[in-house]
Amino acid sequence: MSKGRDFRPPSQHPTGARPPALPKETVPQHVAIIMDGNGRWAKQRGLPRTAGHTAGEAALFDVIEGALELGVKYVSAYAFSTENWKRSPDEVRFLMNFNRDTIHRRRDEFHEMGIRVRWAGRRPKLWRSVINELEYAEELTKRNDLLTFTMCVNYGGRAEVADAAARIAADVQAGRIKPDRITEKTFARYLDEPDLPDVDLLVRSSGEMRTSNFMIWQAAYAEFVSVDTLWPDFDRRHLWYACEVYAKRDRRFGGAIPNPVVPTLTS
Image (cartoon, rainbow, N blue to C red; front, side):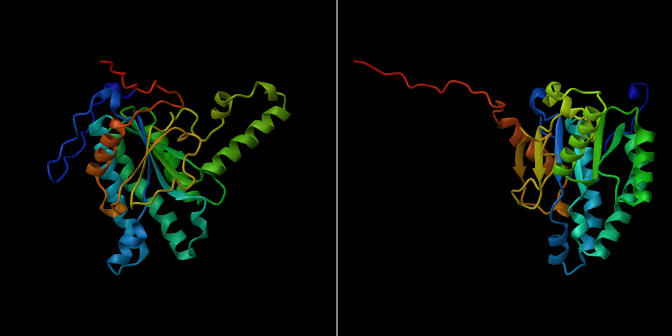
């Protein structure tokens, strides 16, 4: 386990900002992030779309450091979706190289901070060089336990559910599972990262209000917070804001509490 190692603490935010003093029980355990607005950020500055993706790397790293400071245990980031293959070949090529190089550049820093790196997504179509970097980072950091960072690359929520269903069907056909014994718990074991807890807080930058096919199984009961800031301008303070909003929400998971009844006053 990583507990015997000394870790490098997160760097301080340039402004000196500190995380809010939230009660421990109100801090989300798992935050999933849709990093949106890179293209618009670049367009506003007369730059190519790829410049927005490049600027977004620093935003992601700062957010992860802020999650560590606050006590969040899991962060999952939507780095490249199964739908992103529809973009121009030049942008797809850039994103493949960028995701590969980002993991290569940051893996040692993650390791020094006690962060475990995981990968969720489909192998088909994904560049072998990207897979190699992701797998190396997974192996390097596998004993770290301060925070688990999941890079969702060539990932789609529906694709993950469909792939899980296919694996279950194969096990049913092989006689390893009986169809009438399949439960939600059984199904969850066939997801890309079966030990990943449900998402508590789903955050999207850029002000958009869509979940965009991200972790649709894990985020079934997640609280959703949209932040107007475009992703390259996003940092840990925006994450903390979203967590403060989350802390004020009343999460009932389909249950209910009695509505307060105004007492009838008699003279």
